Image (cartoon, rainbow, N blue to C red; front, side, top):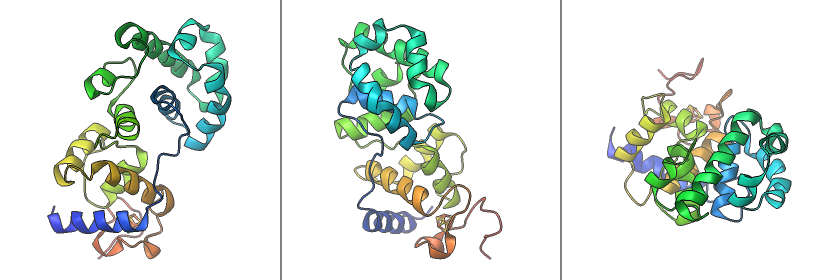
Length: 214
Ligand code: SF4
């Protein structure tokens, strides 16, 4: 991978997507952690509709910890996989209380040690709430990096490693946000808009059906 190509992609993304941001609504690191857990296999918009009332009902790890599992299941049901998500939320809340005094830690290892919390979730919380230069690989970042030939793996953690090796430190958080935004708006899952994409000239369109170069 040439450094020039990465630089060009970075500057395109920064220039074209100044509005790129985390779509999940939250006010505290705990709320963002909860919202990110709920966002697995669910759209951010749907999660926002659920958390509108969920955060008022369960404002703290303590409240989630003491609430009945069935009640939490009912509250998160619209986000799908509700049994597992409710279980994770309770387990995470208990771990936060026992290990971190009810606060969300600001270290990758401490976050990924929480039950059901992987690198993507931890990276989102660290980047968004603590200003760390993390590189969360969500479904959009994974898809677009592969299409652009920036990463080969299908595994999000491995793609994070691949991207971290080519995206300079200090630019990773912004890169993940803007690449994800490009994925939401142009390089969409089902029908990437290659003909209007500003990255087309340097994109090998890996895995894009019926629109390959050459
Ligand atoms: S050219 Fe097509 S596949 Fe490549 S980044 Fe743009 S929209 Fe995605």
